[in-house]
View 1 (cartoon, helix red, strand yellow):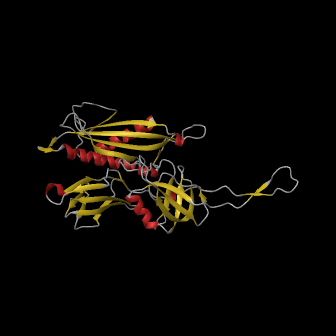
View 2 (tube, one colour):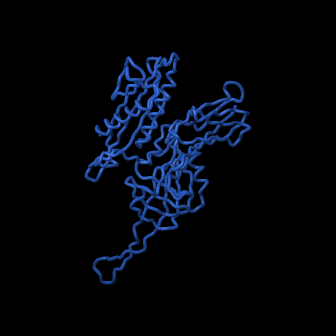
View 3 (tube, rainbow, N blue to C red):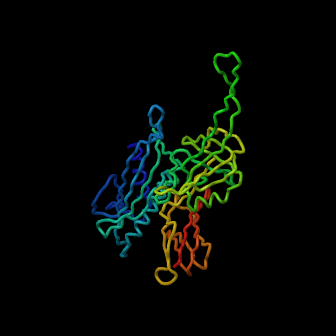
Length: 384
């Protein structure tokens, strides 16, 4: 694990030095250092720390680790800098280094879980913290991107972490991708019926294996607008599904979809259950790797409900969006443009919601990229 960390730091350092337009040799800036530093005479400076966590989900029955979790934290510190007799703002320098960091770590298949400004005690310093995670195979030291990590959410919505199995649905392009974040996948296979063949006079009961049933799959999920919208689009229809296991084996089947919202209990999360009535038997697939595709996801916090005015300074709400992969295309739309509008500027990553008149509207934001399944989020906008 230490070797992999050192390898990443070495390659990242070379990448920054080669590609940053703010790089200088004497003194060497940006300075990339391992570990933590509280002070430095030179800026920009980038610190990179790593830790690993043993996850028993990836151990054999003999408690031998197949994979280890590697967690990397990067802090980018910048100050205003004079170049060619002009002052360059610390935020601009930090943005450039952040973009380089995102591109490098995406290229080596690490999953970003955090990217946001962090207050520093020295107010002249602009600091941004970025965190990544991945699995490293213990046998060959290779980085494995479990794509179903994609739903690790840094926001306060109840989404499954997908660190074990995942439920996927076949899309129009023939690939399987995440249906929606769920907290279970349903069972595959069933115990066959037991038929009694005991004859009169037998001292011991005997039986033979009978017909194997193909029961409905019951899959729990959290009920909120985004998940329900997905289910509303497929309820009553028959689709192809894939239950993917951590080693990329899985079970494939077809079935008709229905869903229900569970009773609301005090002190518990709103949940429901998806019911899939199989129309085919479960088929074991030894290698599912080429059957699946990643899903673009939003990695920034997005409110479920925002309130804006329709006159003056309070008429706008700006939300900074980020995605994984970082170069996904984002679009935004409102279902009631006479009440609220939504626009997105890719260069700044800013989603601007503007109140027009009193009422409410649903803003939908979509992240998409070629080779990935797209992902949608919705925001209820209340205009006062």
